Image (cartoon, rainbow, N blue to C red; front, top):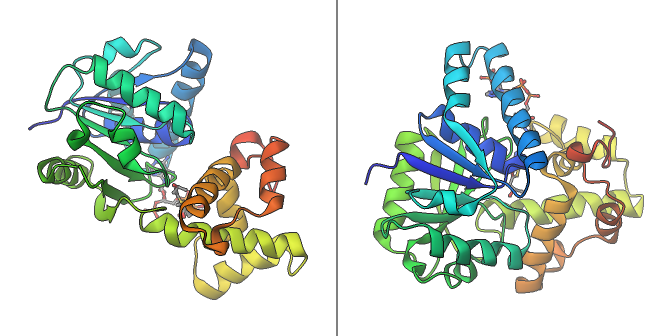
Length: 284
Ligand code: 3HC
């Protein structure tokens, strides 16, 4: 199966990054958003990142313009009828994601199409069961910033067909040029099962006054060669996304390390979501 016609649901932090990766890889991309205003913000996000890639010498301006020309935004999910691959990157709300998969199941006509979710930690099988083709549903989990981070987790549910996992893995490696790893449909998959308890622990340190956010970040950058410290990373991932991932892992595993810190919940309630809202633990 040669995948050419793709779509991304959502153009927030992750959706925009994934759409950019697909367009840069020469694929036809439709981005589905809920209204024109959010679509315009998504397109601006992609344009900004592609321009940054040109400034960084990763792309020439012709390639940027060509990538932008391969992207089309719509608010009508019906326009996704002929897609061969759809990657859902809507907000981390299980009901919203389930209803998107149910809609995709109705509109996507190709029985060979692959329906993927970029969820950080929610069970893939629940989205698969919202469709009549659970064997064609899997997780394709990118990392932020998607145009830069090389890793993609390919997450198979207990019903994902081997052929679908193989096609998705080959696509990620050969077409997108990313490094795929295989994960099972368990809370947090591989990376977030390790990362979320780490971020929660760092936030608990701030909450309890154990150390300042600056010292925690400096500790992990200078002491362990992380590119950025955990508090700054939580701000970059989005505190809302961190909270939903922690809730989802904690609900299923009961592991206290992933119990969302109260401070994290309060900050999300306050609209302090990190880089994307202009303020989280730090100001941007
Ligand atoms: N397009 C393409 N390449 C770009 C780019 C763009 N828009 N912007 C930057 N780059 C390239 C640069 O050219 C540079 O490449 P080089 O190393 O070959 O020179 C590289 O990306 C780094 O860019 P910068 O030097 O400008 O930026 P920094 O050095 O400040 O790095 C960072 C920024 C890449 C975000 C780095 O701090 C980092 O890796 N942080 C950690 C990110 C991380 O851990 N992400 C995972 C989050 S978890 C997640 O997403 C899962 C979710 O489910 C929760």
